[in-house]
Image 1 (cartoon, rainbow, N blue to C red):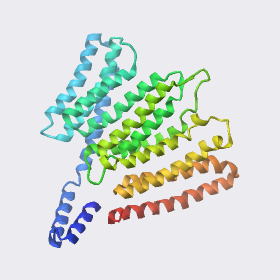
Image 2 (cartoon, rainbow, N blue to C red; image 1 turned 180 degrees about the horizontal axis):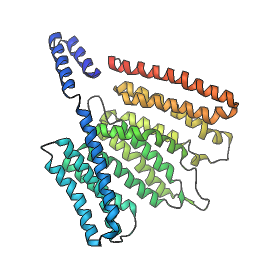
Image 3 (cartoon, rainbow, N blue to C red; image 1 turned 90 degrees about the horizontal axis):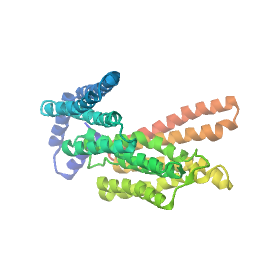
Length: 385
């Protein structure tokens, strides 16, 4: 039985809503339910893995026979590939809903392949963000009809990819656009991560949480590294384009956080300020010359800001009883310390001393961080957040 339910039972018992006998019956019932559904996750894992293999196999089959087909046969195959999986999903809806969800997800993924293959068949004008836009529209329509978490996850991925692609195309041969894109995606990842709240835990919100959690650390590094390379012939972005980019990069994630979290979205506003401060460590803002502060801040500032953000993420997890935020915060803090050691400490020591220091850092630091993580997670389970 989950620690959260146990916390609720204790609270209800203390308040006199239920007595100890009813609480014990609820515990026994939940224990039986967990035992009865104990093998459910292997089945779901097999369905998910089977859906991925099916999608990959279909795409490989089409690619192997593509050159031997006429344009008409190619287009017919594309249409059949998209329709077949959605029809199979509709048929299996009442019989086995998880299988139906997998079929519909494969169908929407096949839609993207079909859009780009259709563009190749008819030699349409090349603008790859437009193809992603059509794919995203299809995913939005599928989510509107089905309300499946897989369709919501595809929308959550495809819409940012489309907007990011349009931004990349609009800022070609200019510098200053990648930092805007990186900060916008990072803030969106934080919004996804915070989608699950104590009183709001749906499959769609959990899918958003996973997407945000996976993307958070890579996008943090990308934000600091943005602007590392550009040609001298490139021109800066116009003021109008910069204003448009910043408005979209900040307003869209914050608006989504308000839709998902309502009044609790003020914490996402604080996170937006952290993202902006993190962006000041970007090499694009400072370059390799200038004052001593402007040369040191991109390196030292990055570690200070990420360490502070990791601690804040742990605190956020404690506030809303979310274990994944605590784990991500601890992991982010550990990576910050490790990155600082490699970049600023290791090269100043001898070979043997640097290896000894690295070993001590891994052993002692890893033990302390894991001990801290377990204590914080146990605090959540006791309901002391």
